[in-house]
Image 1 (spheres, rainbow, N blue to C red):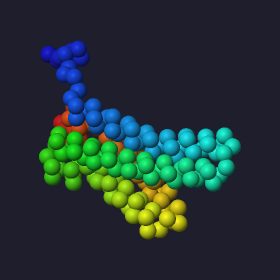
Image 2: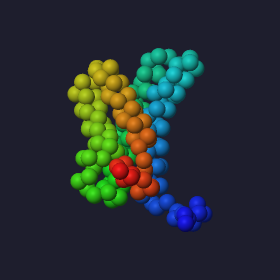
Image 3: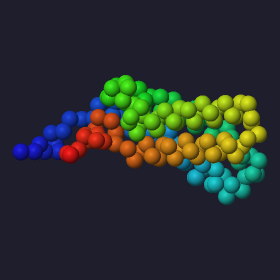
Image 4: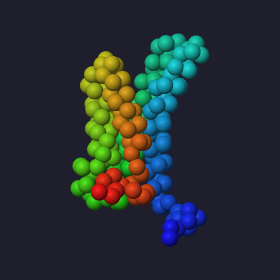
Length: 149
């Protein structure tokens, strides 16, 4: 006999913090690059002003993404075993987000004229976030590889 949906346990703090952090950093990255900056350009602001706003907000969002990815990595370590993050797709994506964020800040510090590299790094960071959104939330039911064989 199966249990009704009414009797499910409410999601825990780890579940909620995972979703909240993921929503903020992934949504923020995509929103800035694909909605806000084109809208500012269409609004008629000077292109130099739009690029300066984009550069300032991109740095802030990459730092915020690194913080949220670190929070999500801590949640993943809490739910799963600490050494399983190397084999888990979510752990690999979160580690790559942290490496990309460090690379973004290193390049922006030492080679500030490398705007195409910074844009590429930013878009790969956003794509990793999109791939992370497609993964199951840790501790929320069926984990990858736990199905019937």
